[in-house]
Image (cartoon, rainbow, N blue to C red; front, side, top):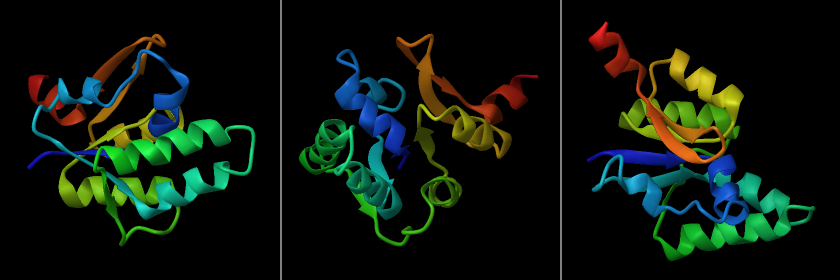
Length: 132
């Protein structure tokens, strides 16, 4: 089974970008299971008391409504947890965090991100290295 691991930045963008939806991810892997970590949930909950509370609330509702699996064994620092989970599952990470994206790619982990502010793309460093 293929896993798409959702980062805080991606989940928050679901509320902030009208054109973006979870179904956009399924075009990359139609039968993938959506998953996130307990640390991402903690980050979203920390936003509930600030300026981005509406986006955080929507993100938490999306997780619940769409049956996104929450991996409980990862309750530390979100970026580290996402990297570890992606390695464990062989998953793809959906993120809009540029620093995290670069770290993931440098570790050979595929990333789904927003290019030019409007189009979701998949970078798979393993596939690219095989084509060279």
